[in-house]
Length: 236
Ligand code: CA
Image (cartoon, rainbow, N blue to C red; front, side, top):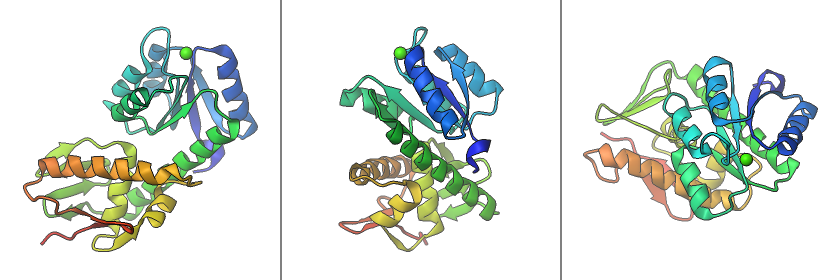
């Protein structure tokens, strides 16, 4: 994706922070739109072309986590939370609701730009997958429908977060092969920092749980190779 074709929605009620973010985006050739509360954010996400959402959690009309939940009801659009809430529980709540990433205020402009590049890389990867895979992926009870980015286990749809979906597509594309942590991080993350390995473990654990909950086979799809990486098993 070209940077100048990307439209970012900034959801922030605090004017100085809104200005800081919009100035940064403008200086780096991103297009952006503004929303000063949750309802306006939801309206813009449904009515205009938005590629990425930057979301404050403390909004005047509703909690940012509810905005995430509502967006996830109809879209896999990447959501990066930018919040003054620093507790782990707040982060986990936002990530569980479906946020892709979490930045704590005060944040550095460089960090924000790095997170954006990482998110765009993931969008690019998903677009490549969508264009290169003409048919659905089927492995035992697991089915990925690339066109609609939906995943089924035992014919029941499972709801994945965007990062989980990216991980699943990567494993599916390389079914039978062990993928190293570094390979996965390079494909699905970018500007890898140390903590990304622990995030990878968390997302992979959550992905496995969602698949295995619906599957009649136990531990059959994603195998952990301790100290090395992960592999999707080809089910007979
Ligand atoms: Ca706020």
